[in-house]
Image (cartoon, rainbow, N blue to C red; front, side):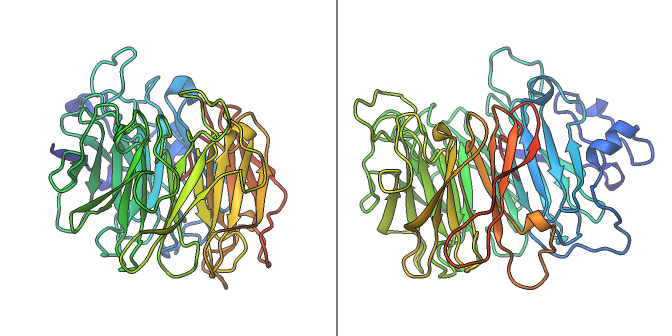
Length: 488
């Protein structure tokens, strides 16, 4: 299916276009003519941009050398949605969609990358429930993705991405950014898990290629597709073989490979057009495929053993461990981990983590593995793995180590406020002190976790010391409309 990528004129990139307006009727506002409310919603939180240039830091939207954080609230303002940007300078700015409509879910997914090669981090925002025409009551949205370009002045609205022939795709329900072709610029992958083929992903800005779509029916993917598979509901990227080019990971948590809702994960080398299917029935992967496991419900990549190659964590939040587990209960949950190698992800030496061997106690409603994030919380050069356990109002943290990767030794069970604390997690470098990312040693990451039902976002700083310890959990922000649903 052909894809389109609308580009606004340079002078017009301060505004967004509404996906529900006819192309001929779209109005672009320039910085000098936009009303104050429009300028505030898109302005930078930076103090002064004079003489500043982008420095290539991966999480810096405004070129001040400090990491920034985007927090989505897709149900804000009658489900029109919003995204709050917390700049490292301490200022906050709320992004909204120009022409926003109730039910659009602006902020259904977020991804950060340098998409235009200017060395500023850019932000992609999914708007999965927007309709190209009249809204269909109770129907899935067509979906669009809005790009915000990073600059010394902060985030500025840029291109809008959409499918040329939209259906009930929920295009933009998931996003991932990474360098798939090794050219130094990030590509963007957009998930459309309700696509009529059973789900699809669209790849943007590969060198020498127009945007294109991949599904389970793509010739070199060669998978059986069911309309309910949700192929592309979760996405991640990582360089698993250390060749300098990222691979794409596509989660299909409802994929009925052999059993209803068992779930699957597909690892794709986009440039070479190779695909590898993984399930809990794949030889070497711990556990066994069962109905409603939701294998692939969440994904994260990080270097847990410090070998310079990314490793993959796969959430299985529907996994049943308790006695008398009933079909389609939430699940105790597990997380499978595969390690990278010169030949890519290996299934030998895989791990399956659960609260049977960690702090805490597994319960049938815990959903251990509902969210995942990786970051170096102690400064030893190895990533740790943060695992959301929203049924327990907690986040489990496992330490990485050079000798063997993740370990149960010293694992932490971090508790927070809110009924679903841990439903979303991310890792942010050195942010609590607003330090420059380019200064001195590699930064220590802190843990960010949310309870979206209550609109609470919490933060626990990492510590540069031996072992695994986090600072006191404190509230970072509060909002409405599933504030903290996802992070960028």
